Length: 198
Image 1 (tube, one colour):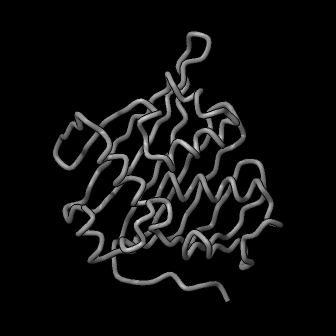
Image 2: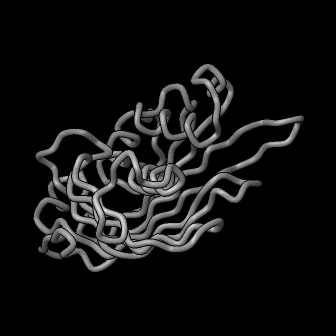
């Protein structure tokens, strides 16, 4: 998959997801460009997205590296609204190609049906970027991840590039299982770059 994406590293992206039973939910549309030479899984994609959170006004997001991020054309810094930074972090981690690759590689017992792959693992065994995001979103300490699990489903196109990715975080509370889901679709893989906002 990584070598196929490296040849045509940019795709149109749609995202929807957030915490179940909360207002921390968003949709996003735009483009993502895989940058395999960066090595840090949440930082290996550039993004240009319009983000529409459920609990605030929509905003435009451009990410050119973990330290080169823009919201509505302005550099993200300490003065950027903390809620906006939370949405930015959720979307880039839950839809980043490197994070998907890390998650798939860390799963034993992956099942396959044609171009579809699926697997699951206990949350404490997930890549660190996902664990940090789950803990931050839920307002938990890392120890509370024990007893929760992640299930994922990945579909590849005929050229071995991602078509869709679904990640579900399953938490048992008072005898009921609650699933928070994060779904990303990719289309129109091609060459190209994401420019900095003007």
